[in-house]
Picture 1 (cartoon, helix red, strand yellow):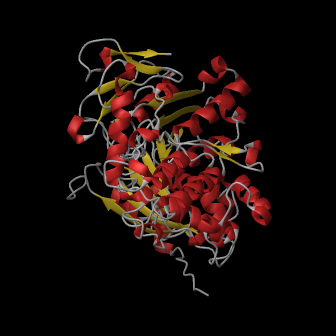
Picture 2 (tube, helix red, strand yellow):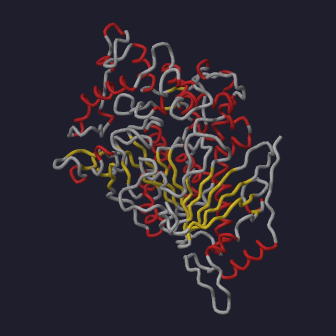
Picture 3 (cartoon, one colour):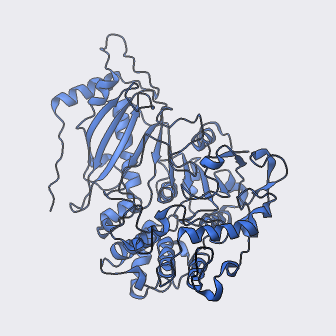
Amino acid sequence: MRTRFRIRRSPTIVSVLFAALAVAVSGCGGNDAAPANVAAVTPAEKCSALAGMTVPASSIGLPTTGATIVSATLVADTDSGNSNGEYCKVLGTIHPVDFNAPDIRTEVDLPTNFNGKVVHFGGGGFDGTIASTEGSPADGFLLGAEPAGVSTPLRRGYVTVGSDSGHEGNALDGSFAANDEALANYAGDHIKKTHDFAAYIAKARYGSDFVHSYFIGGSSGGRQGLIAAQRFPQDYDGIISTFPASEITGLWLQMGRISQSLLAPGGYITPAKGKAVLAAVMKQCDALDGVADGIVSNPAACVFDPTVIRCPSGADTGDSCLSDAQINTMTTAGTPLNLSFNLANGIQTFPAYNAFSGADFWSTGLAWGASAADAVIEPGVVGESAFYYTFSNDMLRFAVARDAASSILNFNPANPGSLTSRIQAVSALMDSTSTDLSQFQRRGGKIILQHGQSDQFIPAQLSIDYYNRLVSRFGQGPLSQSLKFYLVPGAAHGVGGQFNGSYDGLTVLDNWVTKGVEPKDLTITDLTPATAGRTRPMCEYPHWPKYIGGDQNLAASFSCSN
């Protein structure tokens, strides 16, 4: 049993806070000038007045026992290492109903030069740490990076918000999921709770509500963005969902299935062998889009036979070929998982990875682990454990079976027997596969959905399938008024791949929401060190960039083709 400490407001804090509010401008701008005959309150005083403040449970739209501001610190424009201008860094905790559940730890960054808008940053993996709200959100395909000249949202005057989704840990640690409230927070409840906490704090600082609210996230954060549109449509005006784990239940089942092949005797594929796989794929498929540029721009046209790189007699004879067991691993990754039961929203399958058309599972040890032995280290260790194994194993052990002795390696993902109903319940809690975006659309909400064709963690086909279901419900024309879907060839999951593209997605989204400027003729820039600066058109699905002649490093040399 742990002891929870709460910070109470003192009369001094309250009096300073009310003095700050008395001079706050009623509009949303960053003007901190005081009216005549009222003593000026500095940004530093307004910031420090927030420290120790409590947020009542009644101001948070889902059940909590309130929230506490742990600290509020003014970061000066001239502080060493700060490139975001002057802002107030607020750290807080949102308290659970279940005393045994963890707090949700949050950060809200309040710029002195406030533009009236907020960007809510999504997390990734199992979360467990607060998103980097002082940096760049996942509006591109290289995590934390933007093209030259693109400032962070905080620097531009946006309030930035993030949380740990309701538990402390790392992206490979799912032990929190043994607690129902912690699991519900991770599944999506933390989105609403964090949003309402941030709105309360921002109003106390600026004296006004947000004019526009955006959510930007990738991976599980992309899933969170879709949940924001589906479950909390009144809170957000625009969303960028990058490589979303929308069917996260099917994802861990598929990752478990692949792990069984990967970790079977002889099934592990080293980075050296992975390099041979990619070289063979590029040799056959690279030029199918009109130019040999190291990118498979139309994976659907790439039909690769893995026996081309089979070792003689199927035995493992070196790094230049795959054994039969290793071909089985790649084939498993390259085929869908078909389930004997329905997940949320009637889904009964999880798609294949582009295993034989550019997905690079070896560019980082995070996907398949540093080695066959390291892959199964629990609790997960970043840089050693395999995400495929730890994510699926922890979901089974803590969220579903509630039995730490369970193992994904002895489990049937397609037909889980007595655990089927529990998996379905967790799917209903976590998956963001609903096509009901009606409320979000009615309030004018906009979504940019984007995925990389070389994604090694979440197959691009997952977003294609979700988009196609949306088209079936709304029709492509009506849907395009509120949602744009882009596939980026060569782009992977924040790292790896052949084209780590990025663009100023926040500005594109903001212009669509505030000015009605529909995204069109977008260009994405590669930030991969060896090929940095080359550009490609961002083609709205189902189009893909086809080479039409000229400098292969320029977007103008490609046309969006179907």
